[in-house]
Image (cartoon, rainbow, N blue to C red; front, side, top):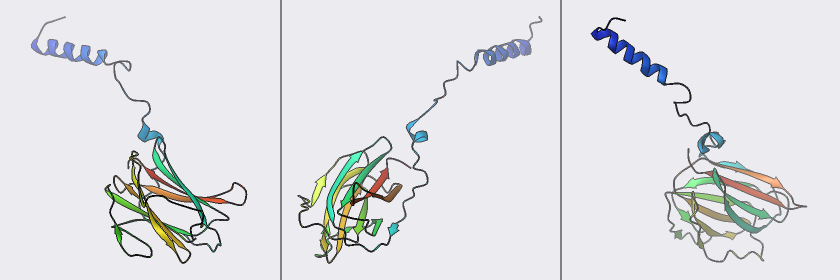
Length: 179
């Protein structure tokens, strides 16, 4: 082998390429973002119109790997709803703005009254989840119930109804942890 200025450079470059075997290249095989199927959710309003005599009986929240979830329990078959991001939370009967933390506000309008036995406790409940920051009770008036959840940002969300258990039903709202 002749030693020239170019030969040494070529040999060095060839040795460097040979050293880069698949074992030497670190490529993550799975990440939370690739396993979270939230890409088609979007952040536009979700609406379903149904007629019902159902009533809200409970609200609960939880954290999951890819999203935070709110579940609204209803006494009977599903009620209509609208879930959308808003600029501010306003009490349903009072018209008074309710201040919250977080970068975005997701309002849930349920076309059903709250059950007389449902007691939301405080108007604003701090959650401090990855996405949900505060849960907000905005009231129930003339067959309509308003709730809200402040989120860290305007993130993709989805809303859907589930039947059961028994004759009851549930409205589920999921908000992704990231885009």
